Length: 298
Length: 258
Image (cartoon, rainbow over all chains, first blue to last red; front, side, top):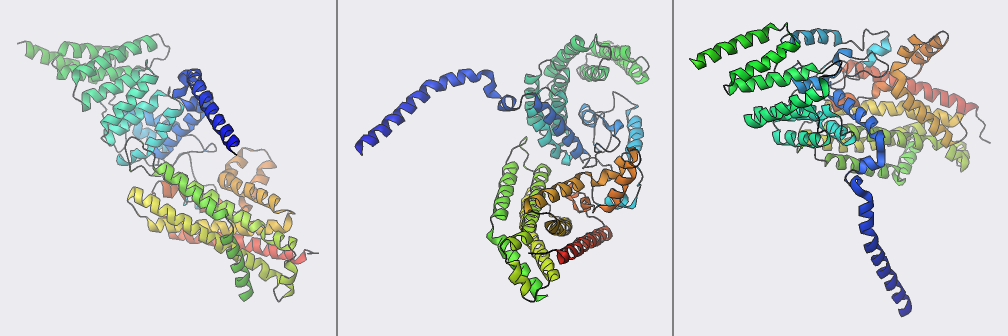
């Protein structure tokens, strides 16, 4: 009996020794992949799930009113969440429209087209009756309820860390509607680690610094870096993302104005004017700033 | 009527003895509580994500319980040869079908009640909103849905040879109707003739089980279904249940048990 116990003990010691020997090797073999088990297990199929989860966030944003693959798509509502994050989305929440005075009108037009659009008229009694049992009216989440999109956005980021809009949308919701500035900043920084070249994330980080932290110096630096990144990536592009650039410049101009740097503010507005020469509101702002500059120099 | 009640009580006792419900309930509860404990941006009032997962699990579990329980009722009686003494007593074939249906439906209702109680407690404690009328409407329509499914499976158990094939075919049919039923007319429009007409006929013939799925309304807190529509959906379900039960009885009457 003692002999068997001894064998058992020896086996245990042997196993322990082998484990101690193999463990460092296994750690070394895992390399950088040990930080991301999902990537290891799922590979590129994660992106498919990421798209699904991002769509789910949009479904939640519309309170379940969303076209299936059999319905006509809501074309005007494409990129709805991004609009929300960029502050260009018009509905029942508060956000700025300084960057595009015609925006509200455009959105209202889009809204008219969308209301009841993908469902259309009722072709038969089954369809008409069935509409009592699923969301059949176009609504948007109220500001406080936008928290319900967050799990889907978080999971999208886990599945596809390169999907930049997820970070900006989540950050906007957290910061503007839920008052969670710290969480918004942490999530954006996570996004920036995964997408170091993203001018959108840098712009959003700058907004946190300017609007929530009241740290003009950091905001200016972030927006200047964002402009540099934009120039590196978009300047030569056939269809440059000029909307984000005008947003960055507009924010930078307002910051400089607040700081009394009128010349810099004017320079930013002139940059916006180069992209869109017909914007009379920008021309007016430049004139106002020149007047202010003149008064200050007297 | 006493025979029907006696037969149904046997089915209910059978469900209590089997472990299907307990396993599915524990799984549903575990997964829901696990999802509820996940921290998203330090916000403990996020609920809809968890509600969606919980309701999906409840629907899957109830469907599995209803189909598997019903599918084996008549074949098991025939296999064990207990159907002969049962019918030798003054129990008609109609009463047997009625008793089996009632037993399976009430048993599924008891399971639903437990599932929905759990759901109400979990979602209510999370959201701090108790929309009892909405939950009751959803549970009732879910139960009516199960009545249609159970009667359909009962009819399948007379037509198909084995419970496994019956379960599989019914499961595919029900899930197919839930996912595609609402859209068949849209697909039909884009098809050439005669496929278009055939699909349109199918669209009008099939029981539209998607009427009974109020999950989206519950998840997004969209208020009550108009009571008139709720009552009509109940009638619609009752009509299909009666149709399938009558069909089962007619087929069972002609079926040789030897």
